[in-house]
View 1 (spheres, one colour):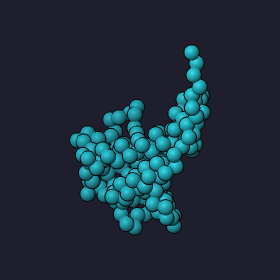
View 2: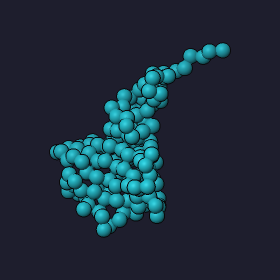
View 3: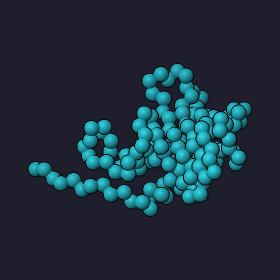
View 4: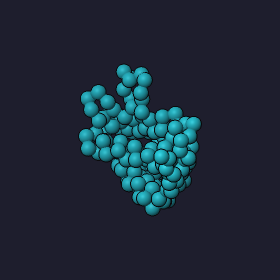
Length: 146
C-alpha cells in the first residue's frame, strides 16, 4: 500500500536556534579581530586535527573554512565552509564536502539524493563537530592564528 508522504516544512525558529548555538561555539575558536588568512588548529585526537581558517572578513560577516588536516587521509577529508553573520549572531554552513548552495527544502526522492531537510542536517553536522571539539579537542596554541 502506498502512502502519501508529508512534505517537509522547515521550522525557522528551531533552525535559527541551531545557527545561534553554532555561532557561539565557533566564536570560541576565533580571535576578536579575525583577519583573512588567520587559522587555528584544533586537535581532537593524537592522529586527527582540524584547521579553522578565516577566508573572508567583511563588515558584518566572516567566512571560515574548516578541514581535516590529516595528510594520511586521502579519500575522506571532511570540510565545511561556514559564514558567521555578526549582526544576527548566527552561523550557516554554505558548503560541506562538494555540496553547496543548500535549499531550505528538497523534494524527495531527488536526483542528488539529498534529504528533504538537507540544510538543517548539514548544520546539525556542524553542531556535532563542534561538540566533538568542545568535548575532547584542544587548541594547538603554537599554531593558533599563525
